Image (cartoon, rainbow, N blue to C red):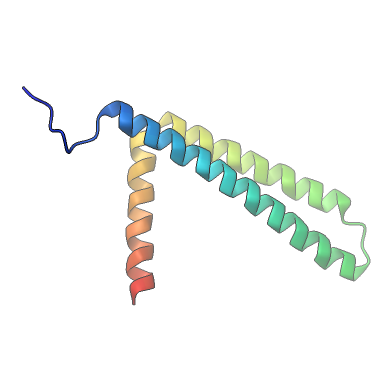
Length: 96
């Protein structure tokens, strides 16, 4: 049986999933930094010592990032299909 040249191999799918996991991690890190900065600015405006709150939120966002990355690595096909589905739904909603 010959392989279909237009169909990606398992190795290609694994690499794509690993890249998606890495990009997700980077996006979550950026989100954590942005959220941390926004929270810090908001709390500074209130005059509250926010360092502890920001550290706590950053720790929780790191936990979420590790959880999501772990799940993607455990089930790469499922994660890729979920990402595809989310992309299709968002594309449909944004095209309206």
